Amino acid sequence: MKKLVILATVLTAAAGISSSGPWQEVAVAEGKIDKTVEQEPKRKVHPMHGNHKHAFTDPAESAKKWNDPERDKWQRPEEIVAALALKPGATVADIGAGTGYMVAPLSKAVGKGGTVIAIDSSASMVEYLKKQSADLGPAVIVPRKVGPDDPELQAAGVDAVLTLDTWHHVKGREAYARKVYEGLKRGGRFVVVDYEVGAETGPPKEMRLAAGRIVEQLEAGGFRAAVVRESMSRHYMVVGHKD
Image (cartoon, rainbow, N blue to C red):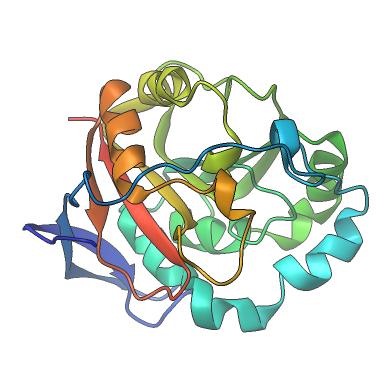
């Protein structure tokens, strides 16, 4: 259960993410949850998720589902972008970018002078993103293949980092969080969005992580972290701040 305790001001698009309209400040409730209530499930090997590997061999086919505009109704990409507090010209990294579902809204948020580093450990996904880069502007899109245990961010090189539906795949999360922390500029944010433990759809339930556990992992990496209020029906959102 999420327990909201403080307010954090973030930026959100006045007209949604369908255009590069003006930005306005909105209040977003943020706070820690009761970590004693939710427990991290025991891990089991799963044919599609075991050992943190996906069998996604056809990105174009995956994109039909992952990039479906209907997804916006429950994924709320505008809320995810708002939590990152991006400014025009910023550099943002999307860890586990996949077929680029969040790359386009991130690109609109940072604008023509900004950069989106689209990170994935799958070579086929990265190649797909390279072919799609021209359509994901106006920002500079930098698809990048990395290993599973390091986002390979330049020290203090990015303004914000996002990972959507990916954190439950990461091994050594505390160490990984530290690497993200080191890659962020002072004042930057790391936004983790993942499936609720009790959601009806998503990865195998034994792989899912309680939101409170992610807060602990980000804090172990150096962040000041908290759960943020959102309206997603299947997910929660945790924001880590590099103060």
